[in-house]
Length: 389
Ligand SMILES: Nc1nc2c(ncn2[C@@H]2O[C@H](COP(=O)(O)OP(=O)(O)OP(=O)(O)O)[C@@H](O)[C@H]2O)c(=O)[nH]1
Ligand SMILES: [Mg+2]
Image 1 (cartoon, rainbow, N blue to C red):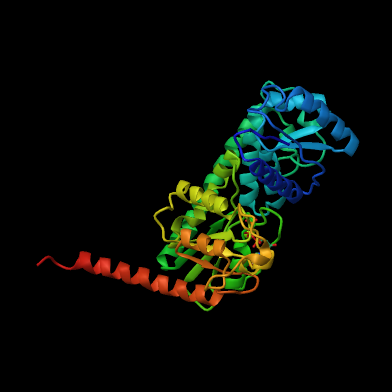
Image 2: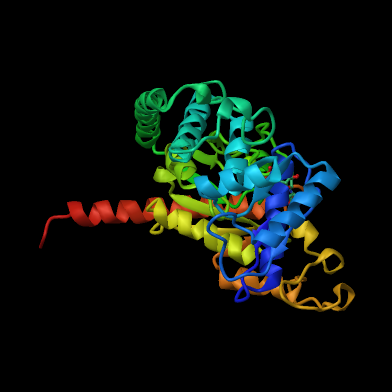
């Protein structure tokens, strides 16, 4: 559910909710109904208005729903009031994302990060609340490495948070040692960043030949992976966790250590799903994160992926009503909006990780970029070491 403010384009609300639906599915749930209410701002007590809550209650009963998910973050009292009225569990978007992360966490580092984010999210929501976590039962938002620990009291939660932060520091140190080692060996580092489901891991797999977990569910990758680009001995690709809009704050902080794998990037590939009507927005979200990580000064190429899906037959043109069959292709054989996307984000290249389009070209371009950067560095060292005349 979400409110649909009058100043917002109604399609925008639907897009937000269809992404929320994807998140619910990725967390192992099934979305039965979408509920929106046109109003300026959320009701302070129950998020939706009184009448709408009643309507929702009926719907929950009728459809046998066991969970209500809100796209916006809910306060502790909104959660409590809604649960009381609806008689089912209510969670928000952040909790769904946290839950997916908890399911996917494999490595020790991933587990620490998720548990930390879960505890930090829950702590303020327990204060003054009557919610008893132990009574919540199963379902989305209750799973994960933190599950049993969530039943201990707040004081213990704080101690646990403290301990996890310490553990994370150790992980960070370890990572930076590995990175320093890599730097010494003068590897050329390419970091793949981008919205979740853009195809980063698919591209990584195609270019390195190493098996990776790939799926149409959101947040398939949590742990960063680094491998050599096929046919080279000094170019490393690093695949990392996907991004999403409104990423829960604590999760972002917790996963910073993971994202910092990109800290040494000599080149960033911003991977985007070119067949997604929201491609432009996904690029904006990724750019914001890249800036937050202090990487905006690095050379960045936009890789518009899933070229195989952007043929006129399957094309979804953002904001336009052009009938698919009537899109005329330009000289490059691309639909006009794809060319616009490429131009607006240049340097850029359209690729298909699964069909292999332009991957050889991409590898060749990386080699050239590595040589260019090396030459530039040598020239700089030469300049500084030459005596003044
Ligand atoms: N048609 C098509 N599908 C692709 C292409 N590249 C990736 N996919 C599909 O897109 C989905 C997501 O791919 P991933 O490689 O897991 O995406 P990701 O960016 O690593 O996603 P996260 O790890 O969740 O951030 C999978 O179902 C892939 O099979 C492509 O070039 N064409
Ligand atoms: Mg991935």
